Image (cartoon, rainbow, N blue to C red):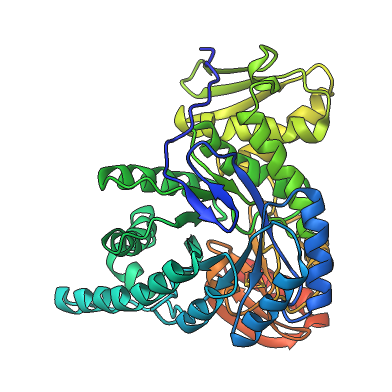
Length: 468
Ligand code: SF4
């Protein structure tokens, strides 16, 4: 069956972020996040300039406390452009209040806005206690909304699969429904307070979970007559070709649905590298002159003998990087929606073996099959405690033979353990050149010197293998 490739964008209301608009018929905005220390003003401004030159339309900064809010004020003054700045706030509602008076948009995480850091504990709330928690959320969030109204600041409600609160987890489990409800709790308050200037993101490193959850959120919003714009991204996607393919599989599936008003491709690389990838993905779906619509791209689903469906993607694109992105962006959705387990890529410009490797990489990025070690690495930010790119290369070199294993490499202990999601093992920054090693969610070696960490990680994996 040959599929008709169309693009019908989901209708949303407009959100104003400084002097740009998101949603509705406005272009899909591409954005990135700085990985400098926010308090290093010179480095942050330099990096901002590089990102803007690459085409970034919004720039986000880690905002751990009041000192970072003041630094943002300075960065804001020095980045004399029309690009709005976004403060990324976790755990501290007061910091969000302060940042909302300085920058154009504040990202808060519903998983830790009023709830404490996750301890992976089950909490039994009675219905009355749960209602009391919601009331506490309402009161606190309304204060932020009032400030945002006064300063014309937008909000992003940014849920991450790995940082759902123990409260939500205890009631809804680690499920798409739990992630969606954690957003809806905030949106209901915003609706009551007549505050429309909100964008929503739900991210996960598992592309399948991310797409399923965002689709569910769209359905739920429609059900409650809400039409907030959406920010798309696959979190902890990693770096290099794998990171690009994983991002394209998740983001592409939603763009193909017509969902998405702003995009961030999270790579464990310099943030300016993220922009062209996001731009290429957006253009592939939204530009009427894109190869997707000129008849040279064919997407088919075939029913093979034995009942397992096969996706076939054919294209004449002669740029390998673009072809990788486009094939991944189109195929993931088809693999899931048609329950296909095979993927064939056809392109006369590239060798069969190259195409076969790419199809395996896409199947793995879509979590349809595992062929090699899976790396879940954060993009790095002002909290990162080691040289992320170098560390990733070291861990990869030592573990790439461990087919099927999922290894998290996370820059900090604050968000790392939660956000490495379903990794089997985790290598997490614990302090300057100190690392903690995790087996699943359990910290098994705390605060060890970084130079010993790779060896200890291999030892741990080997011990576990012998005991299993
Ligand atoms: S895990 Fe920590 S260092 Fe990495 S991006 Fe998240 S907050 Fe930043």
